[in-house]
Length: 377
Image (cartoon, rainbow, N blue to C red; front, top):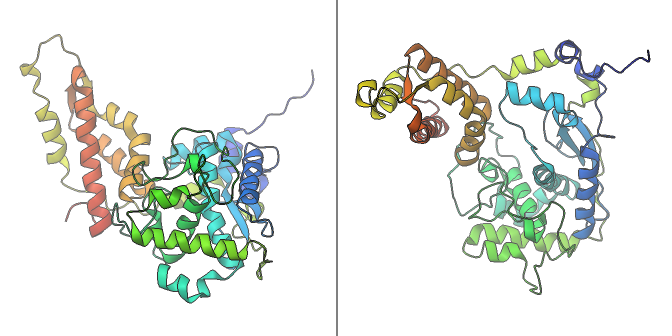
């Protein structure tokens, strides 16, 4: 009998050193997506700046370099499953979503390659690149000073991210634009990479860039986009002075296992809200006690519903509040655990109402944590 490739065994995946997993971009679904992205770069006229692509622990560009890191878990479906299981959130769930992240990272590449952050106008519009980079920032949802592209109001994190988000919106093909009314990271309608290829990002017969119409009532964000449009027009035919290809945590150098990696990520969810029982109890009391309903109405465990909601809840809470998935996921699991301990149930015919109540509770707790540093003051 011919030998068969055992592929990625679960035990090997979790215990082997990541650098020994043979992960690469070539031959995976990432390869054609990157090819589409390179066509987008050519369409907007950035032909002299060619970034390199590699796998790492997360999306990123090392400061002063032009290499773009993609999360290693995107290279294998098995790794995506583990990422979803361990973190509850995948940055790059689809072809279109990966392109969205690539456009953002390209903003960093352009910034570093041409040292835009040294220009007085860049500093005036975005702020100093030397500002402290704070991981857990406190965004102001729907602020009109910033464009919206990636989830979590990411432009508000740091001047460097503000520029990268602005560039990404500028670069996005017209029929895939991130509009203020369509939600951060949204991508309505069309197939990825289907823009008309015009560097001005026009739609139909109009010569007006779509982002100008989209942000016409957001003057601060519009000024940043106009600066981006102007500076890219000036740089299109220039060779970048910075061509360093430094890499940060290249997957071929990661000497720890997936188990170690995700164990480390699990740190930092130690401030779960005490005294949440009252809020949970009130949700299910509002649904009516068992004696208030027909004895034939089935009752379902609340913990099961909370666990089923976990993945979408984690993603959408991050999108609209900026509360990181690494924190929301243990919060949701804590609520499910307490619901079990309290024997909370609900009428099966009121599941949608219960789901709304749970979503509202988690969102309120998340907003508290984002702006106060704690779930319950």
